[in-house]
Image: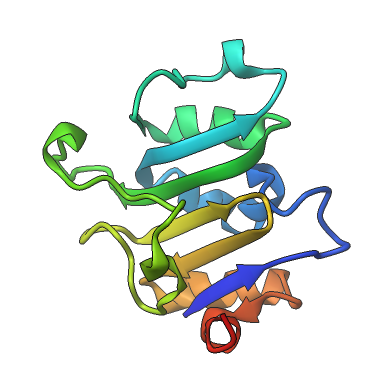
Length: 157
């Protein structure tokens, strides 16, 4: 199931990955992470394993953990969790994107074929979280009781 988070009082800001991924801390290490279409607000940029002059960032689990634990607000961006053993060359694929992409509002539509989780920061107004694994989705929803089903929101968009 796919979820959307907006204006939750329980979060410092809803695009803070540390808080957002807290219910999935154990699962983070199972993936490598492709980050695309990134616009970030942080004072920690120099210590992060990303270069904003690049179109994409392919991070190992420990590097993603570094990004997650930083005090960074994601304005725009797509975070795709991929199997560690998947061979991928981001230069040879259509990169996931948020800004101007109407398909992010469709349920069950992850932008990369092998993604297990897709987190979409939408103009710091919404955070969309999509899962292919029902167990992870349920774990996320148990933690964020106020998260709305994406379908419920997208019907009114």
